Length: 64
Image (cartoon, rainbow, N blue to C red; front, side, top):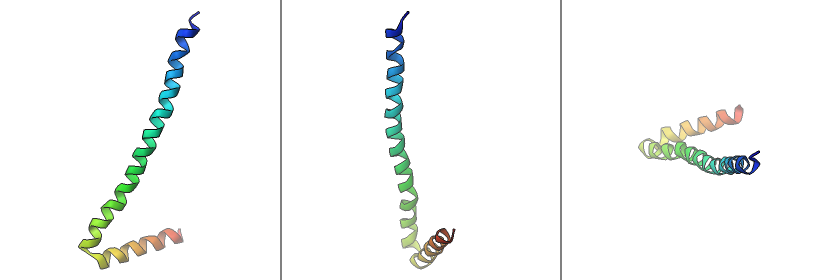
């Protein structure tokens, strides 16, 4: 019987799960920030077309 030896292993795995989840969420947040960061650079290139396209997309999202 080695409950003491087996218990610590699962306990550590459980702790590792939440720890990995925290960084995972942070990475998702960063990925979400990526798309918006890509749009601003294009805005200066063509503010009028970019603005119209952004508005169209927003309207489509609202319709959906």
